[in-house]
Length: 126
Image (cartoon, rainbow, N blue to C red; front, side, top):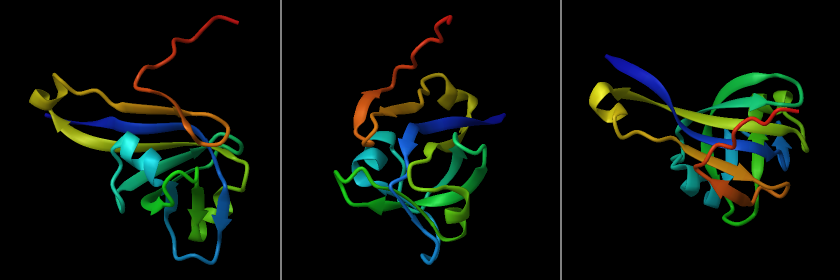
């Protein structure tokens, strides 16, 4: 049996650009792509925390160290500069691959700089 699993997540990145006239995709700081193991042109799902929109596009490389998250083309109608996004990539794995599988979870600060990797913070009671 094959299962589709979360491969990587960029958690709560901030949109820095929104380019309606660009042909499409989402430009992501190359440091974030590398940390998450997301390849250029790989399919990604984007979840907009601000407005609830969810959409699919593909990743392209943004300038390394820039903190860039640029939502381009038609997707620019779904995210504005300053919006908070969760960017996810998924992989299809067989049962043998699942035994050692761990997703790459990347948490960032307000400037999209890596703050923490790989460890999920437990929910705390309020």
